[in-house]
Length: 193
Ligand code: SF4
Ligand code: FES
Image 1 (cartoon, rainbow, N blue to C red):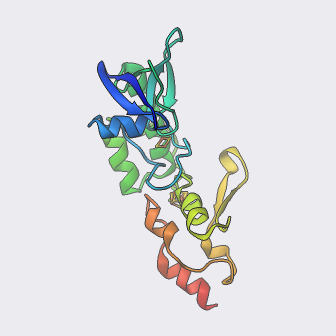
Image 2 (cartoon, protein in one colour; image 1 turned 60 degrees about the horizontal axis):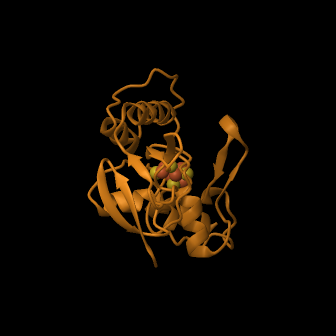
């Protein structure tokens, strides 16, 4: 794999072509908050908490999700500008409004300087991060868990609604879920029906 040079927070960094900005930053000790990304699953860019400012040569600085944005030759990345901080705070407030009781969400919000939300609370347990969908697809090779609907009506069809033949109860979804809303006991109960 060929090497590229880019700049992150004023530091010149050599990376491998094909890496994401998040991977390069993390390898170089630069912390970027994440929620919907977890190795080894493919990044999806759903939650937007990992936004950074990127500028290609000749281009304007723009906000991009570090977990999906490819590191490239000559790229300038800033992970902690006022614009970045404002965007992450807004994302955290929206997440906190959706899942106000989730410890993972509260911790993430605090990490970006948010303690409360000005938006109305939805009292959900699931942030719609999609990790369970990707984990299930990776492990089972099938689309057993999936999202249905769009926008505010978007929801997840969880293992609790599956027929026993489809869900093998491997637990990959429960293991990866940041809010721990999927419990193995419920999957086992479905299997026994
Ligand atoms: S159930 Fe958990 S892993 Fe799945 S989308 Fe919701 S928060 Fe993410
Ligand atoms: S961690 Fe990058 S968009 Fe969620």
